[in-house]
Every structure is written in C-alpha cells, then in structure tokens.
Image (tube, rainbow, N blue to C red; front, side, top):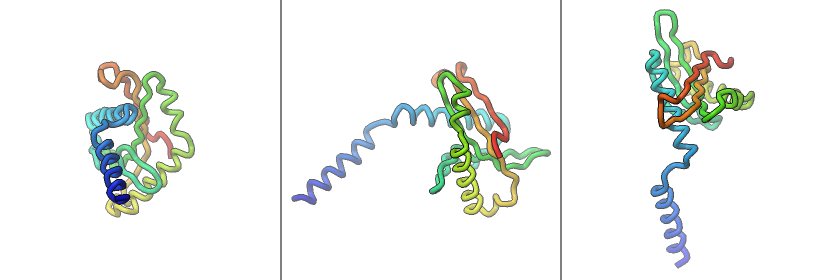
Length: 146
C-alpha cells in the first residue's frame, strides 16, 4: 500500500512538471538565446551547440566564426535585462568567467577535433522587450574576457 502511494505521488509530480510551462524567467532566457543565435548567424557565425552543460557549468552558445582572416571557436554567454545592459554585463563576474573557462576546457577535451582551433569568449547582451524584436537592443562584445 505504501509503495502504491509513493508511486502515485511520483507520477503526480512528473505530470505537474509536464503540464506546467517553463517559468517566465526561463522562457525569457530561451527567447534571448534564440535572438542572440539568430543575430550571430546573420553575421556569419555557424551554430555548433546550444546549452552545453558539464559539471563545471553551462555555455549558452558554441559557434564557429570562419572567414578568410578568422577561424575561431566562439563560446558565448547570453545575458538579458529588460532595462539595463550594464547590469547584465556586470553579472558576468570573475567567478562566472572562471566557470565558463572550465566548461570550455572540458568541451575541448571532449571534442578533440576542436583542440587545434583558436577560441574566444564573447558576450551578447540583450535589453528591451523580447516579444517585439524591433524593441530589443543587442550588443555583441567580442573577446569579452580572456
């Protein structure tokens, strides 16, 4: 009887997760990452992977910039604030940068073909209304940190 109740409770929890949409801040983050990806693709970057996770952290976008002058793997952190771009940039503090670097190193270890490439860390900051892309300001910071 006790096991049946536990199974029922577990099933109800799974059903709630399935039926409830993402939290608003997660929806905004996913929308911001999508807009950033489109913005960068329009500027010639090729998407490699989204939301790469390791035990060290997560990288929002991994892209490749390949031109006559540049062949570079780009690890991108996307930040969104409705009103203040500077606040979004300031939220990528030293500790966040260290986590991004460790995650990127882990990615390179797991993908040996990427090891020989140049790599850099960019930040894309979005502000304004995400629902109306005309009212969204996008600021791309190349080589945001080393």
